[in-house]
Image 1 (cartoon, rainbow, N blue to C red):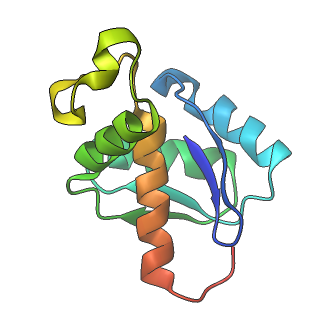
Image 2 (cartoon, one colour; image 1 turned 180 degrees about the horizontal axis):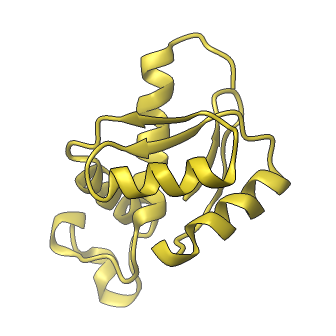
Length: 121
């Protein structure tokens, strides 16, 4: 999950288990003024949309998820250069040391804002 503002950028990000989706969404919405929830249009999309629509009246929209995992991985490795000798390896030769789905969520939010161009948060 990632909370991203069109004007203020990244506000929060975290990786949550899929089973905790509804509770996590409620927690984030109680902390941040969420106006739209963005979901990738592929993996588990239908189930995710149903679960989110059950717990909120905030609009839930889908965006194209193609290559978002690769972009999220690249972003993660760029922001987390590694330790020790690993810091000398190019990002393409390193592997993330944790799940990076929060970075993928940020990529999806970026795509959503790109589609809206000039819209509000």
